[in-house]
Amino acid sequence: MKPNRPRRDGRPSSRAKPDSRLRSTLSQIATVILAILRELFDESAYRRFLDRSRLESSPQAYAIFQQENEQIKSRRPRCC
Image 1 (cartoon, rainbow, N blue to C red):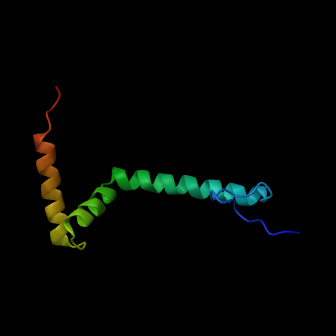
Image 2: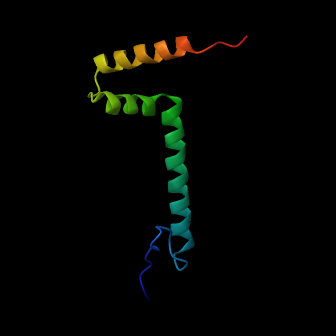
């Protein structure tokens, strides 16, 4: 029996066991959910801030990030 190799596009081959396809799908769903949570809780924004500012994560860097976010939010027009 030949081993199950993924296709060139990264998807499992049609010969892959249903169990491995299910695991792959669940893994992709978990990755998307984690990315959404990171966006909701500003973890992704903080990581982008660190990359843009070329800073390492620290209490001081987080304070600068918070100040920058507050300034941005205060400039936005408010509804109602």
